[in-house]
Length: 149
Ligand code: ADP
Ligand code: MG
Image (tube, rainbow, N blue to C red; front, side, top):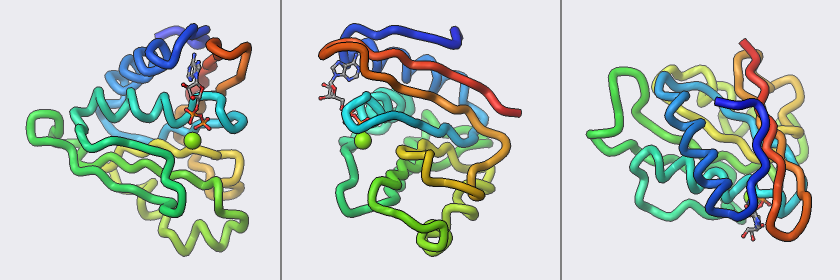
């Protein structure tokens, strides 16, 4: 897996997400960063698709946390559930504690993707994969990956 990609379409962003999902088979937390429209939800859709999740993954407008059970053929001894978390509407760390983020992050059965990770503050897990999205032009985005052990 490279540490930087330039994608020229939403489909290419979903393809990058599939590669990342393959590398996350043992669970963990993927933290997405970037402006509105930079491609975080598009990435999350490709990621979920790679996990065999057929229910559509959208921007959770009012829901902060969405849980998807992995289908039997995609789950393994390690991961059972995919969590899509969108912090766009949350402003205080106390609100994130209310949502139970800490418990979701530490559960080894979970694979978690977080949009608006900038907001995590002290809840940012030390072990994580950070992915930064930047808008280049209408159809292009840069995607930069940094692993934190
Ligand atoms: P975010 O979740 O970061 O707000 P979205 O994924 O919801 O962003 O929106 C990204 C928008 O940009 C979509 O309308 C998508 O079709 C468009 N787009 C254009 N080019 C790309 C690209 N290379 N990668 C991802 N999205 C792209
Ligand atoms: Mg989004």
